Structure formats: structure tokens, C-alpha cells
Length: 142
Image (tube, rainbow, N blue to C red):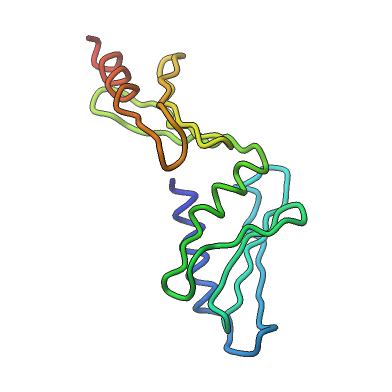
């Protein structure tokens, strides 16, 4: 999620940085390879229209909303799906350190001590209660 938050901050900062102008007032920036390692992903904004989108392999992934109400969550998810990205970050519980992973299909799981604890569902319809309980039980030695 840290990487996603960095992307959102970047989106908002681009809106603040681009100058006002006509419809052709589009500014694009390479967001680096963190979204799709080995590939180029570009974030573009049109200040005069208040819109934004990502470009990956000649496809546009549009953010929803405009101006201060822009939401790029689904666009980021679609880019992750398109490039087959699996993203893991380290988390810390009360008793152990573990990894939280997501993949291009919107699946999420935890990894601890060589074992995976899979959440049920994907993207907006995800339930990690059982996986979290199992992880905590193993971490705490129950």
C-alpha cells in the first residue's frame, strides 16, 4: 500500500505543478518501474480538464472523477492486472514479522515462516478475517 500511496501523492502533486492552459495541457511523467518491473508506466494529467490516467503498453487506464475528487484506485488495479505484478510488503504483528502480498488478480495473502495464509475474494470484495486469525495463531504459537 505504501507504493500506492506514493502514486496518489504523485498524482496530486502533478495537478499542483502543471500550469493552466488549453485542452492540450497534458503533462506525463514516468512513474518508474515499481508498478510493473521491467516495463514503463506513465502517469498523465490534463490540468485544464482535471483528469488523469496511466499509460501502459499503448493502453490508457483512466482515473475516476476530476480535480480534487480524482480517484486512481481502479486504474492502479487495472495496471497491476495488465502487467502481472505481484507486490509484497513487510508487515509487523504483535508476535512476528510477515509479508502482505497482492497479485494482478486482486488476490491477497500473508506469508510467514514459509506458509501462505490466503484471503477470500478479490479487490473490493476481499475478506482476510480467517487468514489473519490463522496467521496470528501461528505467530503467537497457538
